[in-house]
Image 1 (cartoon, helix red, strand yellow):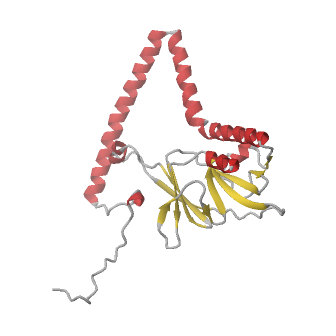
Image 2 (tube, helix red, strand yellow; image 1 turned 180 degrees about the vertical axis):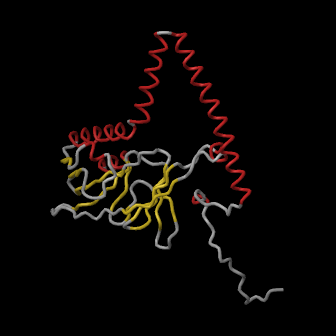
Image 3 (cartoon, helix red, strand yellow; image 1 turned 90 degrees about the vertical axis):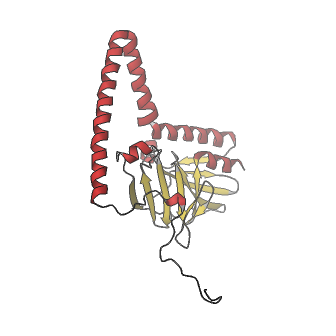
Length: 248
C-alpha cells in the first residue's frame, strides 16, 4: 500500500492534445515501410487503371455527343480554372469589392497601398491597405493561404508554421498517396504604425481562409484561435470578421 504522503509516479512523456494528432507518427520498422511501399504500388496501379478508364469513357462520351460534348468539355475546364486555379484571386477580388463598397457607404477612408497581384503574394513587410474610421486606423496586411486544406500555427512573434495537405480522405492516407507538409517560415508584423491623433492598429487578414488557425501560448501549448484575437501586436481576422468589426 502506498503511503499518503508518497507522490505518484509522473510520466516523462508529455501528452499530445487530440487536435495536434496530425503529423504525429509512431516509429516505423522495416515491415511497416515494406507494407507502405506495397500499398503505394497497388494504389498507383488501381488509380492509374481507373484514371485511364475514366479518360477513355469521357472521350467516348464526348465523341458520341458531338458538339454538345465539346461544350460540356469547355464548361468542365472553365469550372476547374474558376474554382481551383483562380480561387485565391476570386476570393481576394470579392473581399476588396465588398470593402470598397462598405467604406464608400459609411464614409470611411480606404487607401490601397499594394497592387492587386502583389497583394496575392505572402508579403512579409508593409501594409496592403488602411481603413480610417472615427476611432481607429486599421493598417492591414493579407495572409494568403492558397490551399484550402491547410493549417496555420503562430509559433511566436517571428515565425509561423504552415501545414499543407491535411488529410481528409483516409483511403488516400492508408495508401500513402498524400503527404502532410510542414514548413516553418519567418514572419512578423511589426511595421511602424502611422503617426496620428487617432489610435492605429494592425490587422492580419486571412484571405482565402485556411482550414484551421492555431497559436502557441506562453507555455508552448498549441491552441485553436480565430477571427478577432490579438496576437503579437496585431489582430487576426477573416475577411467577413474584419468587415463586421468595421460595422461596430
